Amino acid sequence: MQALYPKLRNANLLVLATPIYIPLPGELQNFINRLTPLLEPDIKFREGRTRAHMRADVLIDKMILVASGGWWEKENFDTVIRIVEELAAVSSVTFGGAIIRPHSQRMRKGGQLTKDGQEVDSAIRTAAHELIELGDIKGETLEAIQRPLVSREAFFQR
Amino acid sequence: MLNVVAVNGSPNKEKGRTAMILTPFLQGLEDLGATIDLYYAS
Image (cartoon, rainbow over all chains, first blue to last red; front, side):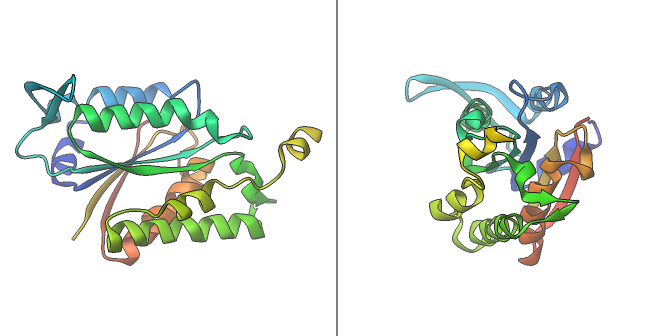
């Protein structure tokens, strides 16, 4: 972790990637906890909440969540999205969006991406391009990444 | 130039489905010149 701090200070964008547990793998929560040395202890009361901000030598101005889950519904990601939104708000940086993929096991068959999997993969690349070219990921791109690959009924039939 | 730090919290690391979602995102950023540092939290 000590070796990571200089890299973190020089990053503009922090991407947190996680499988959905209930809610996070402990190691990722530990990493989030260890971000506090990047924060200025000078806290402010802003828009009804107490908030900190990044130290002057930290360049991070945006955070993105990338998450994969095995359950069918996208609502299964809500808690983890909320955690990263809160982390961004506490640090006074922009939350740049959530790239979430429910029932992600349906993207692969026999170790290869299915046609649906390839489309999602392509939409994820588009999201990255939009983030750099437009400064934001389009809502329709995020929707394409998280779209159902199978009906809920069919998901539970096997 | 965009400098990116990505932290993957999956114990399955590069073989997991989190990596399956993260990899195209990081490659998409790299396509447009971003510098990527990828770490595993576990």
